[in-house]
Amino acid sequence: ANGHSNELKRVVVTGGLGYIGSHVVVSLLLTGQYQPIVIDNCHNSYPEALNRCAEIARDELGPDAPQPILHNVDLRDAEAVEGVFSEYDSVGGIWAVIHLAALKAVGESGEIPLSYYRVNVGGSISLFESMAKHNVQNLVFSSSATVYGVPEVIPIPETTHIDAASCYGRTKAMVEDIIRDLCKIPKKDGQSSLRAVSVRYFNPAGAHPSGKLGEEPRGKPGNLLPLLAQMAIGREKSALKIFGTDFPTPDGTCVRDYLHIMDLAYGHVLSLNALAVPPTQKNIFSNCDAETGSFRAFNLGKGKGMSVLNMIDAMRKATGYDYKYEIVGRRRGDVPDLTADPSLAEKELGFVANKNLEEMCRDLWNFQTRHPNGYGSP
Ligand code: WQD
Image 1 (cartoon, protein in one colour):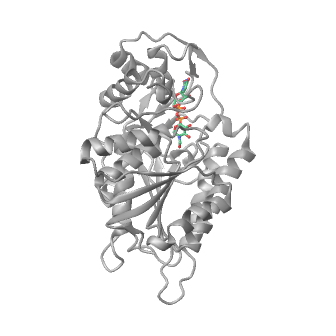
Image 2 (cartoon, helix red, strand yellow):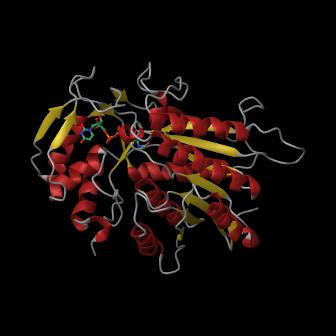
Image 3 (cartoon, protein in one colour):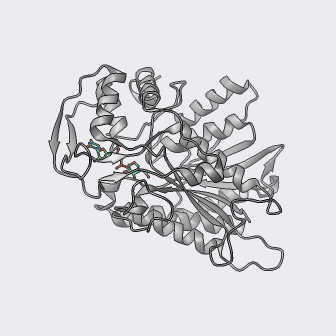
């Protein structure tokens, strides 16, 4: 399958309605090269997100900009997933898959592990079966810094031992192992096997600068930044809790590597660019052999750690809201510091997360103030 519709390459984006997914979809649209085909069950997202992507594409590229397609399908429904892939067989097929759909709350994963294994691992298997059946050979997998557990070395290089400290992190590590095995299937003559890029995210923050797209989880946000934004706009009334100030870090609160969501989203465009390099030219798989298979993993981060207190301070400056917080016990699964060494992604993908903390907070606040009630509001 060459995956081309007229001149656009078809890319399935699972979880494309989500926070990261929708910003990836808009980045794909703005290249003018891809036709995003979203598979999402709306469990933690809203179809309105795709209307916003379409609107941004028209704003920037004009009325005949490529527009995303949505299939409201659950990855646990293997038959429905197969139906989506089959739909495109007669028009040139799918060129690549960006697989983001997953349950992703570290704490929650310890409470409902079977749901996490069913969705994150089982759902991936359904997807990969359809990819194999329809000869889709290019995959970008949404992995996570949480696969590293408590890393020995900070900043964290990709060679760090994988040892997830949460059920969620283990599901991501397991799916990476499944993908490695698929990339190592012995090739029959002439057949080329799956080529995969696993992108290990650090902490995405912010929103599209237009303010039309942002982080809109269903219910109360579990992540720090959207919570701070909703508190400042008056949408979240509960008190801010800091989960522990007794970590071995400069100010005792956890350090994370926050990067702007648009930088992270563009990292997926760069991953597709790397997959598009023909095997005849030097490409990111050139040094892979039968043992490693055509699988590469890259950290997507800024390489700059910021603590919980740093982020509260940055959001206080961006919103003018005077956050009051209480200090409570640690949250299950939290590790002291996850800061990336981003040099491999920079060297091999050309990835640089150069938007700064002020831009993240400004764009997040711009989104929150334009849509005080999220996607539900006009
Ligand atoms: C950041 C810090 C909390 C809320 C999350 C996902 C993870 C990954 C990246 C997908 C931590 C502290 C938070 C609050 C707090 N997503 N905090 N009070 O856990 O680093 O990672 O995003 O791959 O799966 O879990 O981000 O924003 O939840 O927490 O003190 O009310 O803020 O303890 O130290 P996290 P987070």
